[in-house]
Length: 50
Image (spheres, rainbow, N blue to C red):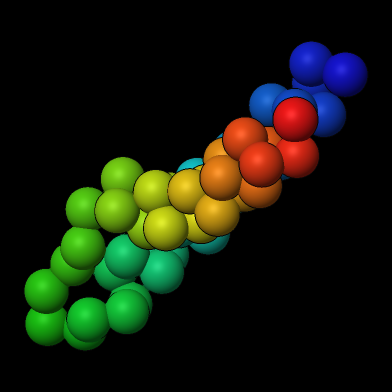
């Protein structure tokens, strides 16, 4: 389970890095902003689920 979670996390981080560099072409967003936008809805879903 841990190797799979590591690979998924790395994939998400690399994807967020590519998006942060290419979303606003002349400037770049911090990678944490993209990660927060992706993970916040999932975190809220987990909070409402329980």
